[in-house]
Image 1 (tube, helix red, strand yellow):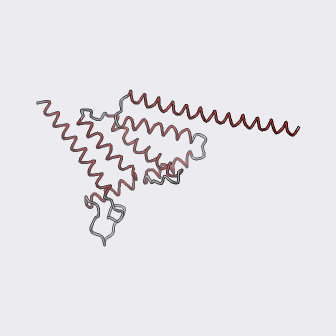
Image 2 (cartoon, rainbow, N blue to C red; image 1 turned 180 degrees about the vertical axis):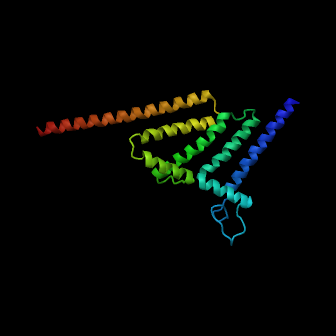
Image 3 (cartoon, rainbow, N blue to C red; image 1 turned 180 degrees about the horizontal axis):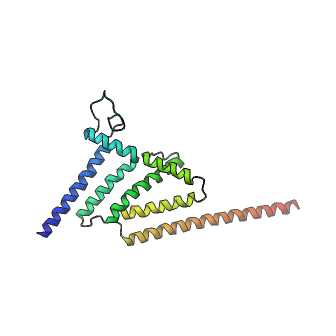
Amino acid sequence: NSKIKENLKKTLFFFLLSLLGTFILISLLSSNPLDNTFFQFNSMSDNSENILGIFGSILSDFLLNIFGPVSYFFCFFLFFNAFRIVLGKPANWHSWFFFPLSIVLLCFILESISEKIAVFQISTGILGNGLIIYFDHYLGDSEYAKIIYVLLILLLILSVILTFNIGFKEIKNSFLIIFRSLFYILFFIGRSLNLTSSKNILFLSKSSLENL
């Protein structure tokens, strides 16, 4: 009996998470900027282009205005945890705890990349824009801005790992890969700078000898 109850509980949670994820995904995919929402209302338009009707329009408009394309991360998270329940690996407390942090950091990082790279144009909504404004205002001209930015990227990686319940062994291996990559990047940058400075010294020495 206990096993049957446990299976029914797993099935119930699986369908709830899958249904919620599917509902959000359909509302996002069928969103239309002309539909009536909380942020805008047109009395001349009664029909909603969203498949889920007015509620789908309100939900998709709210998510896209706040989080931008990062809204799809909600769907992925719900589907991922739904299938983990079927596999007998339900989400731990840290998965739900770090999920909001992953959303916030992802909005910030993507928005900052969008501002720096012209080809990569993506708006992460009100949240991403607001975080960038605060970051530029308080740390934009600071000498520690780049260090804090790198730390936030590392924090995002750690937060995503914990959000998706990746084991501590995988976390350890991921951090080893990250730190090794950073070490090699810094090593090659330092080596290139040394080579450049050495070439400049040789060039100056040669020029001074020729002048003599």
